Length: 437
Image (cartoon, rainbow, N blue to C red):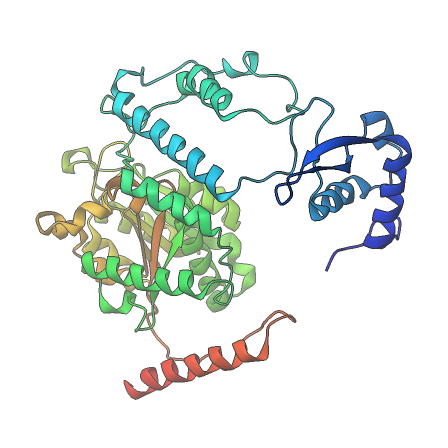
C-alpha cells in the first residue's frame, strides 16, 4: 500500500537502511515504564537525527523514519524534548475538547467588549519567521490566540458589527461544524460517503420547500440542489452551464459574441465569473439601477441594452437578478426579467445570497415571486440562516428533455457490489421518472 522512494527502494528495505543508519549515528538507551509489569525494562528509543544527518538520507527516508517509528510504537522525541507523532488519545481529546468549547463560550460571552476592527499588518511582527520545531502546549496556544489573534480579528459575530451584510453563525452551527470535522468526509462521490451525499439531497429539498421553490427544483423532478462554498462559486457554476448551453446552440466560435446582463448593484462575483468563463469584458453589460425604485434594475433598461446588442449581431445569453444586493438591499423585478430571458432563450439566474433566507418568512416570500422563471437560484445559509461560513445553496432547474443515465464512469478501484447497488438505485429512480411521463 505504500509508495516506494524516489531512490527505487521499497518500504521495508528503506526502513532497514535508515534504521541501521540511526543505530550507528543517533541511538540511545532510556528507562521506559512497562504498564503491564511492575518492573522496568531497557528499550531502545530512536530519536530524530539532527539536521546535518537528515541531509544525507534518501529523498523520502525522513518520512519513512517517522512512519517506522510510529508503527513500532517508539517514542519520537525531538532534540528539544517535545514529542512528535503522538496523537491525542480519547481522554486527552475529551480534556482538550472541553477546554476548547470553554474558550469559545468565553469568547462569545465577551465578544461585545472587543473592538470590531483592527489595523492590518500587525501580525508579522508578533510571530516567528519560521514554523516552530517542537509542539506547543494548549495553554500557550490559547495565550497566543488571546494576545495575538483576537486583537486582529474583525468580529463578524459582534452586535457592534454593521458592515456588509449579516453573517451570523450560532452555537448550534459551531457544534455541527465540529461534528462534521470529526467525520472528515471527502465527499467527491456517492460511494465515499453515501450518508453525506444523500443528506445533502434531502436537506436541499427541505430548503426548497421552505422557500416554496417550484417543484422542478426538487430532486424527485429533473432539477435539484447542491451545496457550494460561496455565492461566488454558485454564480460561476450557473454561468458555466449557461455558457456551455449557448455554445452548443450557436457553436464554439460564438464565444466572443456572448453577452451577460446585470445591474450596477449586482455583486462583483458575476464579473469575476465572466473572466473565468472566458466571456469578453466588453460584453459584460452593467445596467444602471433605478434609484427611484429602491435601486432595483429597470426591465425597460435591460430590454433596451439587449435590443442594441442584438442589432449589433451579439448573442444575449445570461441575465442575473439579485434578491438583496450587498450595498442597497435592492430586490430586482424577477417576473419581468424572467420574461425577458424567456423571450430570448437566455439563462435566468437569481442571486439571493443575502436576502434569500428571509424569504422563508411568509411576510417576505413575495420577493421571490417570479422564481418559477429562473433556470438557477442560489442563497447563502451562512448569512441569515445561522450556519457557519461557508455554505451556499444552489438549485438548478432542467427546462426540457427527459433522460435516463445509462452508464457511469467509475474509478478502477470501484467494487462491483457498489456498482450493482448504484445501478439498482438508478433503475428505481428511472422507473419513477418514466412512470410519470
